[in-house]
Amino acid sequence: MTNRKVTEGTEKSEERRLRIAGCRLQVIRVRRVPLGLTRRGDDAETRTPGSRNALDPLRCPCGDLCVPQLPAFPCLGVPVSSFFPCSPAPATHPASPALHLRFVLYTDQRTYNSLMSELILFWHRRDLRISDNVALSAARQQSRKVVGVFCLDPYLLERDDVAPARVTYMMGCLEELQQRYQQAGSQLLILQEKPDQGIPTLATALNAQAVFWSWDVEPYSQQRDALVKDALKEKGIAVHYYWDQLLHAPGEILTNSGDPYKVYKPFWKNWSDQPKAEPAAALENAQGLTKKEQSAYEKAGAVTLPSARDLGFAWENELLLAPGEAAAHQRLEEFCETTLGEYDQLRNFPAVDGTSRLSPALKFGAIGIRSVWQAASRAYNQSRSDETRNNVEAWQQELAWREFYQHAMYFFPELERGPYRDTLKNFPWDNDSERFQAWCAGKTGYPIVDAAMRQINTVGWMHNRCRMIVASFLTKDLIINWQWGEKYFMQTLYDGDLSANNAGWQWSASSGMDPKPLRIFNPATQAQKYDQEGEYIRQWIPELSSLDTKELVTGEIPSEEREALGYPQPIVHHQQQQREFKQRYQQHKG
Image (tube, rainbow, N blue to C red):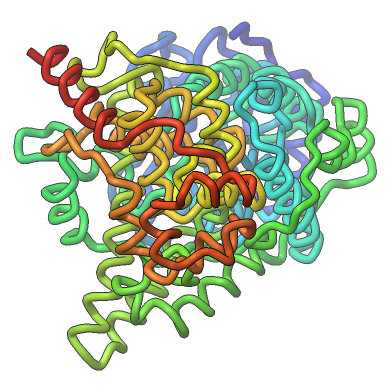
């Protein structure tokens, strides 16, 4: 970054401002030395670029010499906790001449302007809420003037695995988020361009002192964030990012040897033993843009919030969970009051509303994971029997599975591109396109499989037990590459999440992190166990509703009845395909 001197006019105006506050500003012209703070009497003139003293320590109320974390003016009443990394004291530096601080500014004009600005830009991605948002709460602690922004990223919206239902849910969350920002006194701004261009341009136009955001585990997100961070730093704008979507960030839960876990059970034991953070404070009493800043924002590429249809995504059916923070919290409360105490008994039956259905809210961050864990912990502590506590813990383990998958994606980004196990690399799949289309359309001739596929095509969601059934059928019965199914799920699910979806498919395909990888589900056995009365099958395949329950769940429907009802014959024979897959697996493994 090229350093330039602060102009004479700026020096005089800021010196006057600080004198009013009871302090003095002294700007010393020094070439190419980073921004720092010194005590009176320090010889800043002799500092060399890049030296350890370039960012000078300042005596903090804790009694130690601490290096300031953020550019700030403590004499103007900035909280000590915002200024010093130790942050032990709630007090602020007094606006008094007795402090006699001398601020040494060696920076360009843009950095100086952002330093004097109070505005913080908060970049939302998969944290579409204002409560229990770690990074947003941290931004609000730094400044009252926090303005949100969401960037409609062309790369993500133009991929061929985008589900219209998922975009519809996301846009609904953004609509509510805008309203919540207004209620808090600020605004949520919308951009529609590449983030590494749009975010730095907007931050510069608004003279933002910093941009805050929440970190992510996905490979593209990390690459994108690195580009945005570098672009902001080139413009002299501070960057701050936090882990928000996980109770424990990658690197916090490791084996005794310091490696990431590859097996869930020991991960769960370690993870569950660690203390969990409380929900972060909600954004309130914030301040939005001035008229001048609003004009600058509009010139910097602002757009009004479009609908999913405006973006080319049509979804006519009602979503199982309404978008937004309010609906997510309402669903969490209902689940904890009515179902959580029986979760372990009910969760595997697709005809029963026995799961939280919070997956889309967790995917987009319409609800904070600390709030979810707090509700689960409260239910556990209030349980009156071991049976109820076991049910609550079963759901807590599902939350830990979510984190295990995200840690795996963070530490092993190659999972996004292919199998974790070498056994399934270059596996001889059949990849029959006609059979794949029959699977997608719910016309395989296997009732439990077809019911599940019709559910996902109709409502953009599928019960987790059924996800395992149809994934096993695609990979082990049709012998089709699991990545075909992984992509189709992402094209249809409104809760589609890279980490969870990838891990689920790799588990079903025997290619993932599983100590017992070779599992094959029998569709008839699964139906008889988890849809005993055929309720789920009848709901999604109404043409079969008149059949005897035994015929429904076993799939043993006479050919003439299938023909009369317009239901297809089985496209493969399960036992034959099972033997074929096992043979190929052993040969390829050997």
